Image 1 (cartoon, one colour):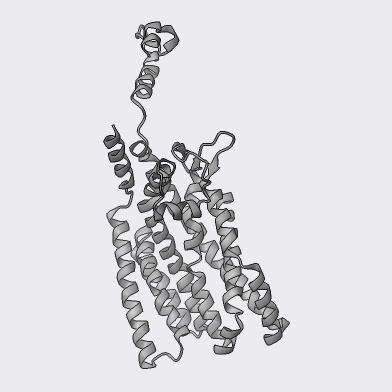
Image 2 (cartoon, rainbow, N blue to C red):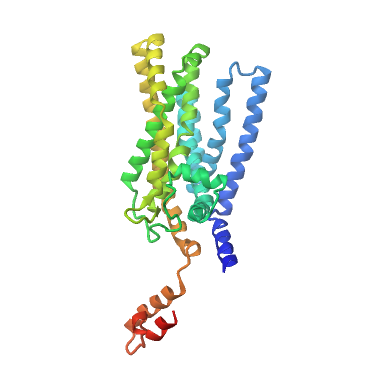
Length: 363
């Protein structure tokens, strides 16, 4: 029996929802990332780019490559070509390069970010649940178990084997509340990181303001990787049953997220120092630009995720719930006989052990 349980846990850990298309996207991202890293190092070593900050568009370009492939797969290739034609026309007719770059990375980069996040969710969702489910059964936790208990803020005195979710969940429309909540959480983190990094006095002395803006805009593209992956745990209401109240994994992740993501004191000190260096008006304009960039990135990625990807993701996860948590044989028999009640003169069993004294005596 112990070997059967062990084999069952291993099967659940191997439960993977990713398709060949998802695997191809991951390989495309890794390949393009290696090429872009090599190009960045080469341009920095040869002096082709005068500052390492200017290599950031190259390092973030793999998101655009994956986004172009995902956009073309979700719609049609000629829509992707039309989008690129619009961008080229804007640049040809004298649009500011930073605006053109913003459009390319906000739209195609947003698609790339969401496609990679959904691919990782398909690959890791049930593996994560299987590892969390077995935490309370182990005498000594492995490193991955400790990481998960930290991320989801799982207490030591809870039975993680009682892990459940809304396995009958279905999406009929875009969840406005979840979309706004995710946007707000990402915006909160983005503004904090923007101020914490860009208003660092040493960075402001080393680079011009336009370089800092370019750096921060491209860093903002990676903010959804810190926010969107946890939304599936909220949508499916994944929770650990407790004696008094359930422990929801999404709330645990958000609580951990808030503890480590926002260093309030350094942010306030950097803000005061930057106000002295660049003036209050310039600082207000800088923060206003941070607000615009973060709203644009989080709005585009959140809407793309919840409008175009989450419904299919939920359907795939729900359809495999029985593989992860098979129903006991007795429950299946009772369910089948419950469905047979509609047929006249169908024999029925009773499962009340109190009516079987010989069984109770044996036990």
